[in-house]
Length: 241
Image 1: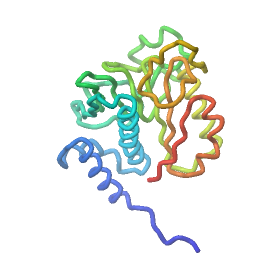
Image 2: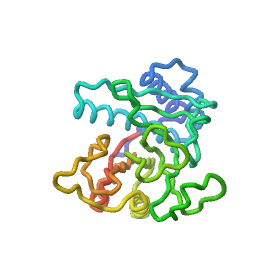
Image 3: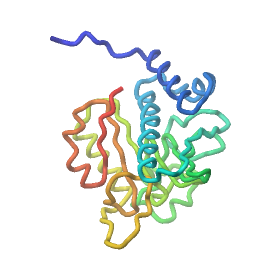
């Protein structure tokens, strides 16, 4: 028998998202309303929902890895008190982001819709601040980067990248995901005796620079594409919405 359950309306999704966001950061109703102004579409709302899920996953990982460390996620506001809604560089004077601090010391920043410089880009491109970059930079829906990163991060600045797909997963999306991953890193195993630099990534090290990539997908068919993703250190996560 077909299910009579209807998907939540955009208004309901947004109300629930605002409540979750306010609860995470201890905010009143006004800041989340401004921050989530772009989340009137399902895809954007799902992206912000995945931001909250990423924070939860990082918190759980750090509690296991650093049980005696004070872990704090705080919202840092730009002039607009809003998350970026279109891909571009880090601009802390304009857009909001989340700061992760360990024992009061900034460890990383989480940004929304940020372009990073591709491994295939010419070495001079990271110094470019104006004009069209074409295929020299690629957008990630969410990115965890080193503190005080400005402009477009280098692959070596990235701890974790995140892609968010509120749709059924397919082979075309897998090809896109693998292409993004290949522009983030080369495949490499941690050699015996070497200390891992990326202590924020809970997965195995399969890359150089050492980074992780997570795919959040609202449809459960994502597990069918896990094998090629795991080869490149990509975590495929079914996250219903």
